[in-house]
Length: 200
Image 1 (cartoon, rainbow, N blue to C red):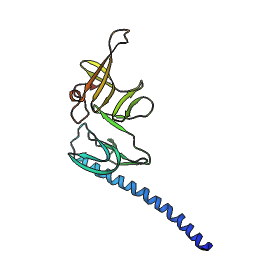
Image 2: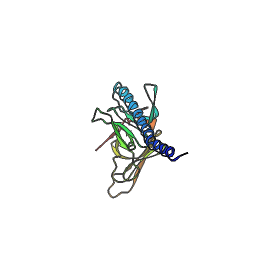
Image 3: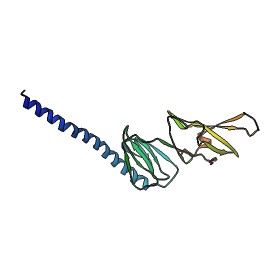
Image 4: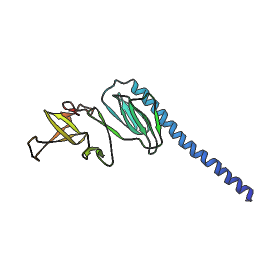
């Protein structure tokens, strides 16, 4: 192989390789945008209700399954959703009619009692470990009013939740603990609590 042929091969590689990489990148982005438009059309036809739908390369609405690329969550109460891959995110937030795109992973949110909580990996907030969610830190919003007492939500999962209440006895460090099953305490299929209300 002569030097002109080698130079030609190198030039072809230098020119074609970025085109191929760009095509892969834009194809994935295009697929996410198309899937996001499909989600937006579907959720605009739904009743606004306090419900989250988890996306894991597919999701179900009204018993019908839809395939998409990526993972995320849909919040039906305000037509908000996040759909993303490891390094891309398409989202539609409640304050805008437009779909937004970012070159970074989507933030992870879950709905609890009608409130969307961001899942964190450090600091104060709501943590997730497999199907278990728990609050950690001092500056967390994890209060419910139940049976005329203010309780802190310690953790919850699909089966129910664990609440804790410091007794209102001056100088007391005694705590009441309450474990309530999903069947008693949570509306079937919604993840919303029936009796208590989130308080400020």
